[in-house]
Length: 71
Image 1: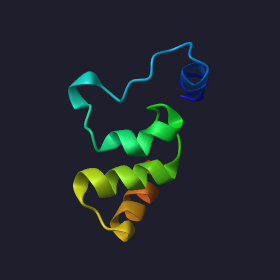
Image 2: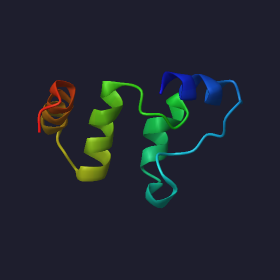
Image 3: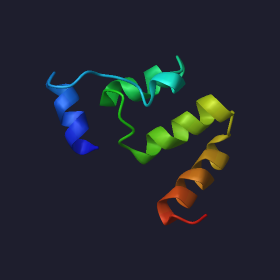
């Protein structure tokens, strides 16, 4: 992921958002600073808030669950 970020930042790769079938306008402001790459845990939280309507606490629980890789 970091290599994709670097290539996009330096113009060696096209900036695109996660998948063409799932390009949602609400993702662009969250992913624009990192050129369409989910790079930070805070972005996962923002995406959960924007796309799923999670509260900040719920989004943090999701982030923690993903970090522990528990089902």
